[in-house]
Structure formats: C-alpha cells, structure tokens
Amino acid sequence: MNNSDNQTKFSREKDNAVLDYLQIGGKLYTISEIEKEIIDLEESIRNEKGKIRDTEDKLILEKTSLRENTLQKQFSMFIARQTELIQKAVYLNKNLLHCVVQSYYDDIHRYKDYSGSKWANNHKQAAYTIKWIVRFKPVQIKEKFDNDKLNDKIVDINSTFALVCAFSFLDRNIIDLIFKEKREIDNFKEKQKQSFYDRLLYILRFRPFTGKQLISIFEALELNANNT
Image (cartoon, rainbow, N blue to C red; front, top):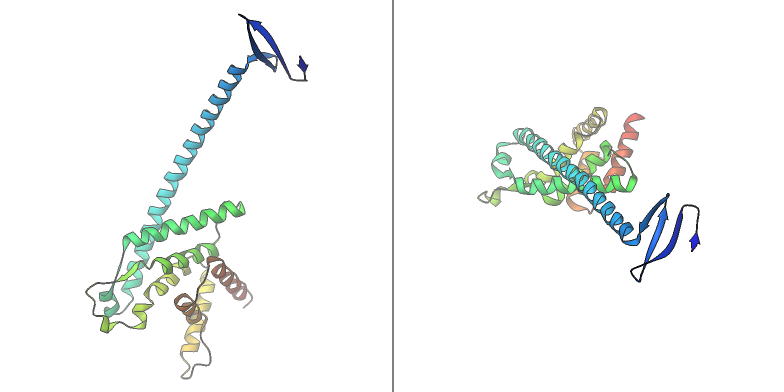
C-alpha cells in the first residue's frame, strides 16, 4: 500500500477479483469511477467550449455582416464622386466583398491571438482593409464595358477604394495632412516629387506588400502628423 498526503491506492479482493481503489480527498474511488468522472468532466469542458465557440461564431457573423454593410455604403459614396465613365464601368461584387471581410477578420483575430490584445488599433484596421480589398478586388469591371475606354483610374479603382476605406479608420489630422500635401504637389506645373498618396497608390498597384508593412507606414505617418 502506497500512502501520500491526499490519496491512497490499495487493492481489495472481491469475488476472487482484485479491484484497485484510490482514496482522494477522503473519498474512496474505484479506477472505473475515476475514469468515468474524467470522461464526464471532459464532456462538460467540450460542451462549455462549444457554447463559447457558438457565441464567438455568432459574434463574427454579426461583425462580418455589419462590416460588409459599411463597405457597401462606403462604395456608394465613393462611386457617386467618380466620373460618369467610371460609374458605368464598374460595380461592387458582393461575393468578393464577403471574401474581403472574412479575410480581414481572420487577420485581425490572428493578430489578437498573437499579441494577446483584445483590440486592433486603427493602423491595423486600415492596413488589413487595404490588403484584402487590393487582393480580392471586389470592384469589378462590367462585362459589357468597352475595354477601349479603360483608363488608369478604372484600372486603379480597387486601390483607390481601398485607400478611401482605410482612411476612415485614421485620425482626421492625418487625412488632412495627406491631401494637403497632394494638393500642394499637384499644383506645381513641374512635379518635383510624388505625393505620399500617389506613392502609396503606386505601391498598391505595382509592389508586393504585407499588412505589417502598411501598419508601419501608418504608424510613421501618425508620428509625423503629431510632430507637424
């Protein structure tokens, strides 16, 4: 017989069979009883996890639906400010938009799991919004549109839309700084340099980029805006 502070294991003959017993917390258990308790406890844990998962899935579904609705409204405002040619050229593909939002939240949740944070700040929201709009291109060119009428603004429409959506997460003073600089540079007859806005648009169109790179860009931009 082996003794310890809180449990004792011993054997007792019953009907010519030897049964193992454990004494835990002053209560005597057979091995089968302990195994059943463990099974019941694991089942209870699985049920609780299932409830949590169901709640999380419901929350994600609600957030996804709200985000899609927000992006659709942003697209309506965005396209209303475009030329008649662009309005006739493109439309918002809702299936691709759904992919954008799902992937956006996947990135946000991965970030939260990695960092242990409950919130994703505005830089990360802006960065992941750009990343997935540019990746999935939910603003599509209409099938019957005359390709001879394509121009750079139509080709860049997803990048432009991505920036509009991303800027909605940033502080107003940052947005003002971006467009003030763009206006100042665009007003020169001979451009000496590219504005930040145009450089960012160029990166989205021609260069590979990651969400982390965009986060760093927005963090640096905010630092610059606060020091201006």
